[in-house]
Length: 382
Image 1 (cartoon, rainbow, N blue to C red):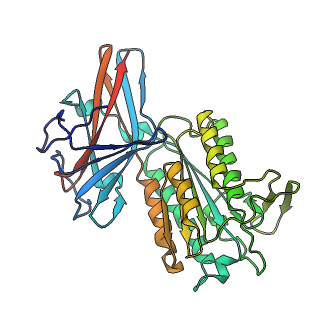
Image 2 (cartoon, rainbow, N blue to C red):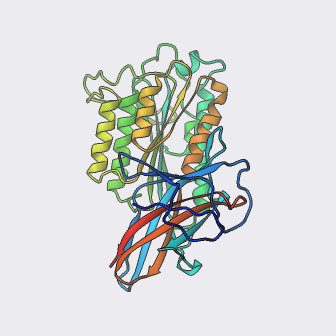
């Protein structure tokens, strides 16, 4: 795969490159470019950016409509590097250009974002054990619920702006020794989760993730969020370490009508550790049951074992964030939410003769056009 970069505004990609490709265990590749020229202008981009990078989300989609036109669609997250930290860039902070074999693609061949759409199935797995109250000053429980609601609301606003071809659906649960799966999937219902009581210290974290994984598989099997531009995203929040997923007796499914009405579930199959969970996720992905899946993890407090959460997130193309202070909880959720709303889906529809081509996707900062990153897509037109 070739990668190229240019140092002059509006110039085509060159064969010489300073871009780097970071290997990936799945369909996601991370590419980074340093300084280079890029056309376009605008506002709202962050200042002090040293470089930007691109992480492709899933594999590009290439299709033909049978009349000599080829559609190429790809999704990615662009990030700004200030030298101190990285942050995801929103659609409003970037512009996108396309170059086909070194020639800039005209605007009439670029697909409108509202035409592309892109559905999202977004889920939360929330820690409802007593440590959320007892181990933090101030208590982290109510701030967690508020941050979870805010995450739903921000993502809903973003998807409304993406047009009628983009739909978002939500799901969530909370866990202690049991997995509590509510009837009402709305963000408003999160406020009704009862505060944990003393003695409810068991944490069935991996079992809860496995339960929500099955919801993603079932949602895809029902036909939602299965196209190349669609996404499945799970966000896991905990302040403790799993101490119950290995232990099971008989499966329990008990109706609880106290708000929020839910099913109180205990699995009949154990989940030994995070490596077994990763294997289950990868098996579902390889079988085509889990298209375009990402898992992000949030760890709160100094007692959290970071390694299992980090391994889960990185194996599923997500990010892991952690902070020991409960006062930072909303910022942790905001960082993950920004990763989700910053997913961009772009594409072109090109009249092409049969043959091999290279399409270069160039992502530029709006008000710093000398900063951009780009990546190639090599494809065959039929």
